[in-house]
Length: 188
Image (cartoon, rainbow, N blue to C red; front, side, top):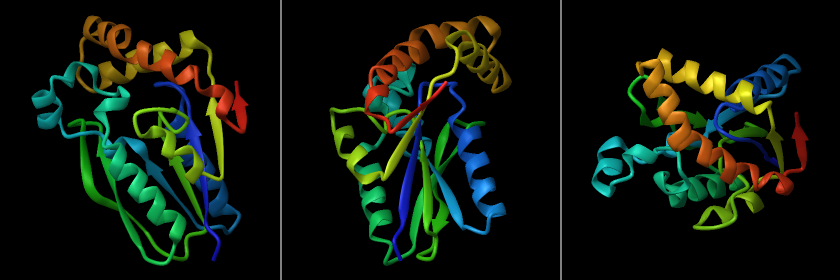
């Protein structure tokens, strides 16, 4: 079986998870099995982020286990054995080990995450493992509103949410936007 890995990327708040879920549902309705693999499952655990002094920048490229992410994508390309991948629990902001199993008969894996097109610090090995990458480019004001609402929904005050977006999400968004030209398609 030939397996296709389809990347969905864009800045924080672009709607990657929503778009990936909709694609998964569209494929299911058409009779094509697929699974969504969120890059968020490869966040370093909170304790490790604190130990490294990176907790206040969670979401930056160096706050993910890029080696593990590349290893999983490589295993998924092979498609000869089932692969278990971590999920992510937004309530506790922690990866959840082995949350998703991808059987050998799944022909399409939708990989969604921020740094699929990033070109340094180990991330440059990701793009060649993906068959196609779609970049989501929403209106920046809408993206920021979504992020602030998400942070509030998960326990931050409005002021804390706005501060987090300005300190962490916006710099990450700028870094990610600079990679959009490497996508196969850009959706506005």
